Image (cartoon, rainbow, N blue to C red; front, side, top):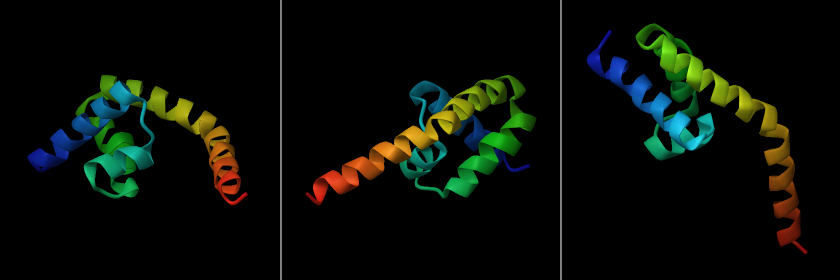
Length: 83
């Protein structure tokens, strides 16, 4: 595995833990696709740093559980602007 493929998942994982960011928000900050972020933190990070992987997994599960709330709030903001 290339050195950058070992470092990037760790950097992304630490960012997600520090900020509680979603995969999409993390992708935006690092200017990479959300598919790349997801693969890095779900597959590559598991092999590189299993302890960090467990912490990231916890944050991502919380984000997934709250996803419907954020979506509803975004829809409310969208339609509030149009009034």
